[in-house]
Image (cartoon, rainbow over all chains, first blue to last red; front, side, top):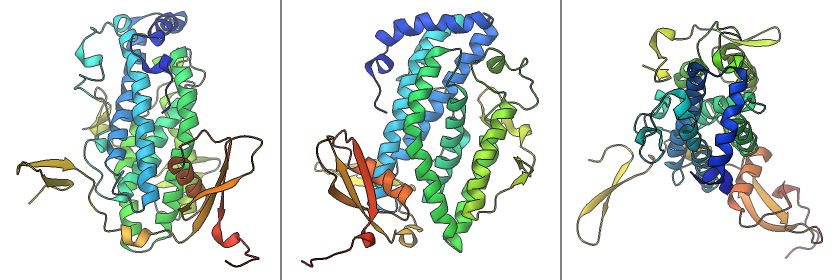
Length: 278
Length: 93
């Protein structure tokens, strides 16, 4: 990401601007729980961006073609840049969230990441890369779209910048999905398996089901413009047509105007604290 | 035997270190793109589009992604990709 000095310099201009803007969400109810919800949102966005960037980077010399290797390197740079722009917000949010400022909120010394389990291991094959590109990168983008007019202005500003750069990531993921979908035999089967492997966790990642707007701290404070269920629906409506067009068999079905998952999500394995499947 | 994705590298001192790389994919050989795209760009409004290189890609979306990530040495004001087979040669070299 071509970050500006304002967003990339911890303790610089961004820090003072962020300190001012942290007060923005206070107008929607200044309490520790809400500040904690925002802190955790920023942490999981940053951590997943960071680990996605790390995984992308591992393929910058191993992708199927020279072109896709260079694209993987560029996408890794983007993701790590997005993480770098988000981490300084944790330092600003920590005091109001009741979290001690220390090594665990600094990107260089952080050890307790809230990243998806799917990013804990290396991608074993190119279809794993493409699946993460379409699903995990896509889910992150869905949240940034919901934060473009966030009441937490530092997140809104970063979201608009992130979304500009994510356009090429979306084109890359969907282009490769079409390519892999045209293949028969093991390539196609491997691709469907890779997608099926991370689809449930990605859908759980939007947050707990059944919460109304006023019950969801982030939607209630207008930090995001939708509840977890609404974000999940938007995401399914985004990826459902892509899978169908690619001819891939995933458990997502169109019902009327909406796209729905045809299988129950594994909430019994969902770790709400670590925000990942256990 | 190395773990998957790790390659032992022999250093000049004779010691080995391990670097991480993604494994070579068994799917790669099947996935080579079959179209070449010409990449055209310009840096200023008063210059015409000129060819700056080529990329291999299966469709125009991927060709665009590859072109912008590979040919990013300048802040282009315009970039375009066209399939090489669309070029009609009128004077043969």
